[in-house]
Image (tube, rainbow, N blue to C red):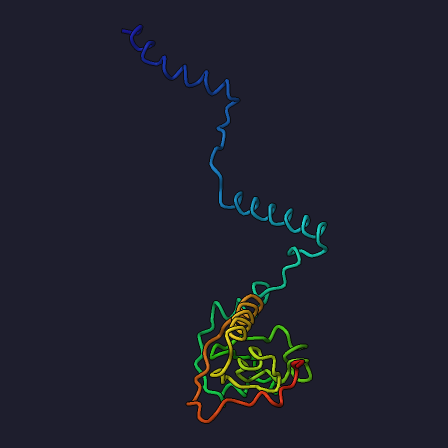
Length: 196
């Protein structure tokens, strides 16, 4: 009977000898969340160093809306606005506590990240707080209106190009509600900004 008990303990002896072979420690094969975080941060740091070395910028020269704090705050906590033309005028840069808005063909963009261009005294400061679709489409920079009833196909293409440019640099915050257009569109006689 003692012989049978000895044979019964044999698997335990095999486990003991296997433990002796590995040095008595268990190898960890799982990856923790901390390990993944370290790898991601290491890759991000390496990427930023390569970017700095190649372009002199941590973001390969990218300066778009994804790097703006205001954009991320709006994405997390903001909501789309639907405002009238009179309400849009309040976002022209005269009140520093309010963002800078520009509308093009009814769509409103937040251009607060570029106050040198769109703020008071900026080269396009007169655009802030207005829908400037006509000015951008026709290059008549004194036609600060959304009235594009008489624009040509090449001007419509130009307007679409401006919309794409604004979408790339800035972010949409909503829409402007326009009233009914009456009368004839603005005359192109006194067009400022376009060479004839």
